[in-house]
Image (cartoon, rainbow, N blue to C red):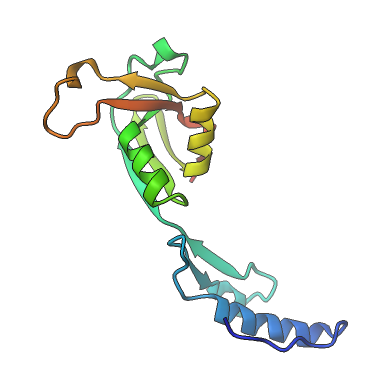
Length: 159
């Protein structure tokens, strides 16, 4: 981390210049979490625009079929999305800062939603997410997940 001399307390122009230098040195390296930060190119035209963009590890889940039995768990099948339990466990140990993205395109519901893993874990811990055990996969030897958590996609923000 580079040291930056601090300008006089009330000198706005010097603080803005120092801030630009700090933004430049802050952007670029990959952080321990896997995140990367990049300068906002719009700042060249608009000095009041936000400083940076952050890129976080993410995994895409494509949903093209309705989870028809989600209603049994109190989650509307029209907006239900699943996430394999083994993926949740793996993410928690390897990528605790990962973002999960659902690309949903099923009859009656088209949306792209995202959630940080911490929000997914909260839904599980608080009992909102429901664990579904796949009856047809109990003896699966092909590596298919044997259980998944079900969520209502509307719990998460639109991308």
